[in-house]
Image 1 (spheres, rainbow, N blue to C red):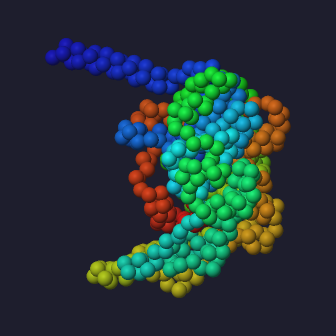
Image 2: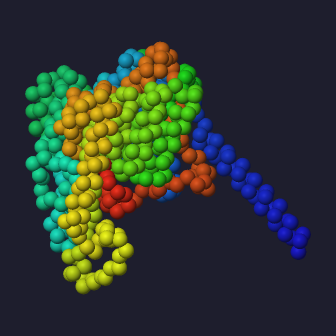
Image 3: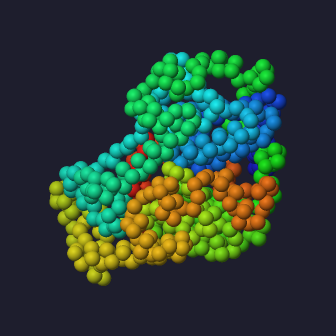
Length: 570
């Protein structure tokens, strides 16, 4: 009996050793850098969701679905391709992009910088009926190619805000929200039947700023006047030859014809994909060497505790910033923020670490698509804040409240009795409304947090508190307007943030630096067996998922510093 048990144990040991060997070989081959031929072009397929950084989602992979693109990987690949003598051209194959304008602007900047090397950049479009963001990116390239039967739409930007108050009224659900102040419209969709004057003013200002920048950049790129571009946008849709005649594209080519266009001194170029080129180490090309600069990512809604996939836990991010402060080998810190805000307390936990770190070493904030409300709170103590013209930021304000189901309970015949020890122990019960006295107390607390927000902005930005209040009140600004108002120091992206970090750290401009990127990507086995928590995203419409997140925040957190949901011009 014992002998059989020993044989089984030995068999299992050998089995797992063989399995481990197979896994090691497979993952070595997966991670092995590809051989880049002497005359190659880098092809990046840009479509679908783009996140600042992505982490392994093995359920998505096993289901055969495509992982979201990573902004960091796109940026780094273009940096590498610029200095890699084997890469002769860059090709962007453009489809529908699920991100906002600031990320597109950042990629556009990287492409323009790539062209400074003397190499050629191409944009290829099959078809896209609503192509404004994608076409904006395409205009960074030397040539724009459209499929001969492809049609494209550059019909301007716009958006919609659904208001659910009538729906909630029919259901018997009431949103009881206190906010500071009139521009703090994050929950207006639940409390209003349409735009308030302040809400409409803010939306029109944001859309107007982004549209003006869009028109100006297109005019410069395509050699037209702004008036001509506006007329082309008003026309809206173009097919094949119409797009050529309008001067919107340079060539109408099938795929095989496009391949013939991709030649270097008459010689054929070989394709290397974005995913393959990610495996090429920057150090092999002389990049990412030298003094260390920490690049810390803060992504998603801000909440208390530990962070999970694409969310910003106050404890997690604060720990990473503290780690960078205590590491003497780190010369400077860049904090890359892409967040609509969230918990005021969690935001303040992160702010404290930014405040302490800024006193010891240069601290730069680089804003992505949005860094508003709590996203601005965690940024305001930095030495310098950089944003794209289209970044949504500011939103200096606070919101607090709950949903009650008093009327729904009556409709359903639900009755309840309460036993309380403490006058306000059931204040957040959904089965009753706030009393007038409670609303007054909540407003007072909300105003107190807003006052702390104003004070910290004034101190961090060297501004007068009253002046901050004038541009606060929950109002969202574009990056370009935020710079004029003193909330942002410079317009630019990650590349400019690195330049500033080097400058403030006394690192010569011509010296390379090593980016220490946190949080780190996790390995397959760490994700499968480790303690790190990675959430698989629900397969929901992005807006619906954001609504769910906002409702969870209101239920689980206290006062919120969060951006309005429906501000993303398309």
